[in-house]
Amino acid sequence: MNHLASSGFLTLLVSISILGALVATIFLLTMLVKEWRSGKLW
Amino acid sequence: MHDAILSPWIGWMLLAVFSVLWITLGWYWGHKARRSLDDYMLAGRNVGLALGTATAMATWVTSNTTMAAPQLAYQMGIWGMIGYSLGSMGLILFAPMAERIKALIPRGYTSGDFVRLRYGKAAWRVFLAISIFYGLGWLISMGMAGGLLLNALTGIRYEVGLTVILIVCMAYTMMGGLYAVIGTDFIQSILILAGIVLLAIIAYERVGFEPVHAALAAKRPDLLNLLMPAALMFLFNNLIFGLGEIFHSNVWWSRAFAFRKGVGLRAYLLAGIFWAPVPIVAGAVALVAPHLGMNVPAADMVGPLVAARLLGAAGAVVIFIVVFSSLASSLDSLLAATSDLIVEDIYRKHFRPEAEESSLRRASFLTIVLLTVAAWLICLPRVTHLAGMIAFTGAFVGSAIWPIAAGLYWRKTNPLGATLGMVAGSACGLFAYFYVGWYVAALIGAAVSMVIVLATTLAAPRDFDWQRLQEHTDEEPAVERAPAWVPETVANA
Image 1 (cartoon, rainbow over the protein chains, first blue to last red):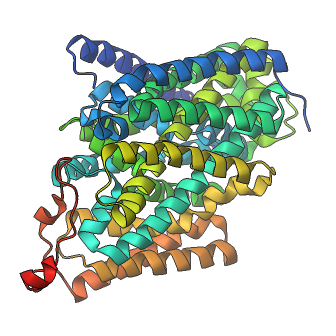
Image 2: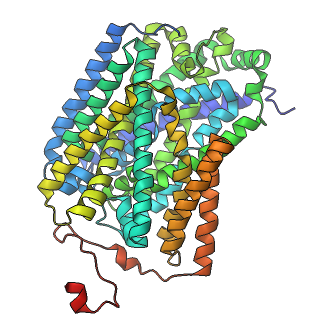
């Protein structure tokens, strides 16, 4: 009853997490270049 | 005992490449750090969003996140992964606090500065004891994890791996101060994110979600149980422990001081959002094990074993890089922040208020070396239950949540309540640790402290003047001011 009956939730959870980690990587690299160019890195 | 996943010579090659890289970067950024104490301790107080977000995220990704998350997924299933990812709430809730810290104490150096100015000396000393004990606990648990993980992954002897990782982190932190810590954290955060995403994509692309679910349902149905009691209990304790760790520790306060004005809120918020998927992605790799029919001799090695099974040596190399980056990103931050706390709050404020920058720099170097040697000596005998010492500190850090949060937002919270909250919360949390279980220590510590702080705030409200937090500038060393009722002649005597 309390168990996940189909693979849907697992697929959604893992897929969203992988996508989130990918977005994080792209954001960090983009922001790094942007701030470096404008001399606002640190 | 299982065999190592990589051969020792590949392990040594990887260790050498990354050690040289981190130390070279530490030396390079050392030029910036040498300009002033603010540069060395707080990276010039002008860190931007990219580096700010990455350093908060990478520091919170410890070797526990990358190794224990797969273990928890393998032992507690779906809730183990989600429970671990709730650790991100600490970063998210600290985001507005970071902004307030920067606004209230723009020239502050440590979390100790805040507690001293807000609550006075008694609360400050209790807080220092809690914070330094916690820092050492985390340092020992990371050092020990480093030696054990390098040994398990590559067969490199525990003592040798432990020594190398501690010396490398000490060297670049000492040379480049917070510049080196934050700069290397950025590279480490990218390596961690890219590494786990690569492993998870390849694992599920080769195996598929449906077969993984079918294998779990047939062989380990408990892992798909949404009402698994142990997993739910772990979820709450982990949440409170994470809050306590982040709210009080100088690791996070020093970053709040180091970030440019207006960056703290966004950086911690984004770091929390970016951190949340990491334990789920790392944990998801472990859920493939039942489908592969793998024999997992030690649950904490399930992540590397699955990676090696699916991708061979290349998978193990990726895991090595992710784990080494996770260890270094936390160890360097811990060395820098704990040394700042000892130098600023103990050496400067207790013994040498007139100390010059050069003498504080020397004290910082020496403290980083002493902390490393202390951690090395404690870790060397390989008393493995010491790795769990971090759970023992849960009682202490839980008790600091309310004094810190209330002190930052409520004028009315008084010093006695904060001090009592920390002392009684720690004592009750410790009692719970020994007589109930490790999983309730942080919860009880935080609950007792909350009751005391709230009750004393209501019973004896005080009207704190926030201006009193604006203590000093670099040009004007801190001076303890006498209370207003003391005649000037006496105060100046």
